Image (spheres, rainbow, N blue to C red):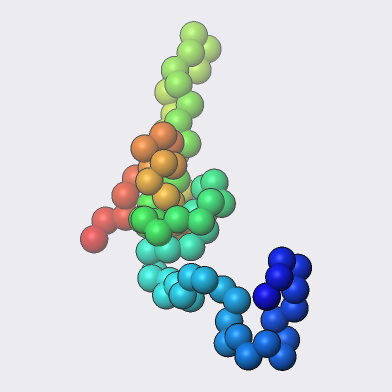
Length: 83
């Protein structure tokens, strides 16, 4: 088939060179950055407000469970899901 050709009626079962991936529960879009990843882990997001001259340090752990990729887990504050 020439570039830009049509696959219909050519007898080709699929024009996709890669097999369909089987997504594990640990793959899909990251809830933090949105990137597709195959190394997602369940975490609680943590908001950290540093201490300043006019306010105390504040740490808030969100109850909602999110699935984060490795780059987000290595850069942003979070709490791994216990278990």
